[in-house]
Length: 194
Image (cartoon, rainbow, N blue to C red; front, top):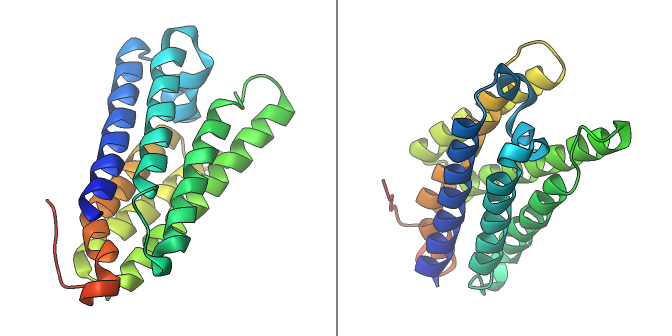
């Protein structure tokens, strides 16, 4: 079970990051930095690789959750499934259409941020506050603050905040999930995958 969950999570995250790198190579604009990852979802040049990465990641995470069968991990399963559905919601709400879509897009993005943050906090707690996972969480949190400050106009680094946030979250999942998934049976013995 644990290997399949981690494998599908990893495949989904790698697919998403590859699609974002392709998008960044297709559009080299300063607007990406200020408008964030979703900038790729509103341009003809990048909509296909962007959409493919989002959908692939979403489906991979959904597939991963089918292998989470332990009762005590159902909250984690539902949280990951919710993030997967919300990723599709981001894709379906291009922020440039009008004010309603912009607010819907920001609301969906905020929900993803909050759920991923909650998952990370839960992982840190479940792993007895392992320092490695705390560092990954702090990177995720700090980059999330940068993204938030960019949204309210204090700084102009939304893309970097979002990208680093997602990388930290992906590393945290990849490294901690094997430990968390075996926790009900094995009292969280230490194991890292770097």
